[in-house]
Amino acid sequence: ILNVEQSPQSLHVQEGDSTNFTCSFPSSNFYALHWYRWETAKSPEALFVMTLNGDEKKKGRISATLNTKEGYSYLYIKGSQPEDSATYLCASAPSYNTDKLIFGTGTRLQVFP
Amino acid sequence: GAVVSQHPSRVICKSGTSVKIECRSLDFQATTMFWYRQFPKQSLMLMATSNEGSKATYEQGVEKDKFLINHASLTLSTLTVTSAHPEDSSFYICSAPLGPGQTQYFGPGTRLLVL
Image 1 (cartoon, each protein chain N blue to C red):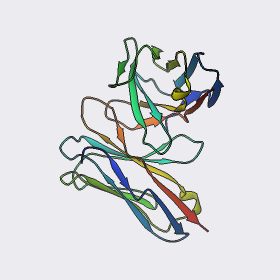
Image 2 (cartoon, each protein chain N blue to C red):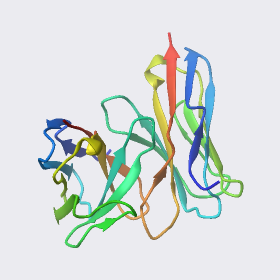
Image 3 (spheres, rainbow over the protein chains, first blue to last red):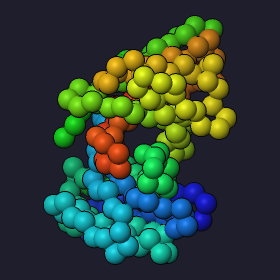
């Protein structure tokens, strides 16, 4: 994998459903993985920064895991709510000596009441 | 959390004019800020790294004379799109890390439309 890729591109779920999306990144060139939540007309909101293989982080109903050896991260949302509707972006930081981020195209989540 | 503001949020200009976009870190100092551009249905693409007190570093394919960056203080970076053309129409967004390797905080972005 040369770029950061996210799937699916979009997702529609019912309120209360749990969901997850994937972020794939180049494992050979990796320092940290960032997840952001981006609502329309607002600033992207930082969710997690993960660096270690096997890392698992949680913030309320949202959690993320990281596999640096195979180059993927999962984001999980438990019991989705309409306010979770947003685009979820992941970004790879390929080097420890720069804060440059390489973004995926995002997963657009819509939660219906 | 830390706050980054960006101004203006939206601008429409005529072809050939220059447009300045400001990015401010409101409650922290940022020696480095980043400028990204996003075309429809594409990812955020890094354009340049803005360095306080020194020249910006540009990504491959980004014209430094077209996109002038100034980072004159620890809380303000500006991006000037010079002699804008319709193909420069895009969404421009800035970010600033709290510190090296730390979370980056984003502005809300600027939508530029060049007629």
